[in-house]
Image (cartoon, rainbow, N blue to C red):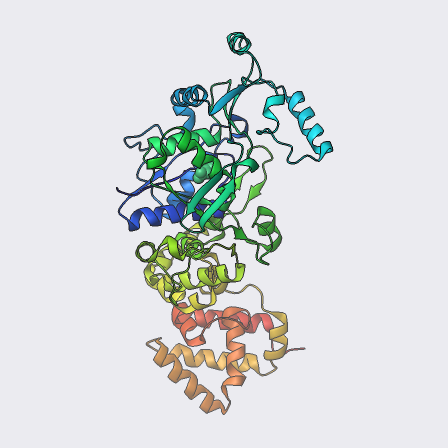
Length: 510
Ligand code: GLU
């Protein structure tokens, strides 16, 4: 049987990085086994619908290179792939459950439910929930006469359909990551499966759709583990036990200190994004940062996520998507929570920028320059990027490290000038200028030879000459090798900057 897995997000907001990781593991698993990866939008809870969230989810997955084989925009044989478009499908299954005695109609009002909860909490008689202990005291098709139920339904009274959980029975889940998990059904409540507006709830829709879409493995976050026993029971009640998918519940993503689930607030507090793309809340207008806008390459982001919960069993840390597909297996996914380490994330982004072909980074840098209204050619961009890339983590930092290649300093670092621009510096610089003008071929070698012979003639060491020269060319004490800078600037610009510094900094430091 060929593998079919799905990512089934609810469009209730932006996709958290934990959600992207779930999608990624599903995708890797599908590709590894030459199976299919489905995207299904679970939007049965209309109250929680957030405009733009579905588009955000799709755009995020695309940015990461997690391409689905079947989804709302490219349906396969088992569509539609958005649950609200499948509404008509679920009714038959709910009727089947009611008719076979595994579900029942309930007419309790919110006030009645609240009263039941209050009574049970004050009795301390166990969990205040709708279950085998309480259902017979409530207003439902188990306690009302058949006639009354029919009348209420015919009158269009609001109702829900609840699952009838067996009183006490061991429900077993064979989880591919956690092994055998068994739960006493007595602890479960009679969850709502269907509402009178004709919409199923998550539990029913999820099980029915996984079955109809021939899903073979349900790979999802640990937060769904408590729902798995109910899902197993539903497979049984619907007579689908033999084709029930296998379950794999992924470990939670934890805060950097290892305590508790990673949340948006941690990101704000510690200064890293928890969302793949920037998200503007349609209600509050608040904007949350995204990895994309912060300057991460999608490959780096995917690499970070892949290692949050899965370990390859080798020392390898950098993985392309193809390498991940090849190496991935669910047996190497851990049970315990995966701690998110922002420093490690920074390390990845740094590595990725170093590993990218120079050509690619330089092209991006040229675009950046163009936006600033600076015209440069590919050769210059490549030279400059090669000189500064080991100092950067993000693309936009290239400019911070290389601005002086493209515009002459307007100001000079005061502290540095005070220390390094001595009384004699201006004179020295003017003489150096004369020497530089004479160099015909302004190459690294010739510049180097020129500087050497100048220092010899003047009987000075590099310490007397270079800092002043750097100040003139860069405006501060930073930057790569001066000779390289001079080659990029060219003779004329080098000489012009020296004269400008002499004019501005004058004869002496005070
Ligand atoms: N719609 C659920 C969610 O938003 C999907 C859970 C599952 O994969 O079964 O996470």
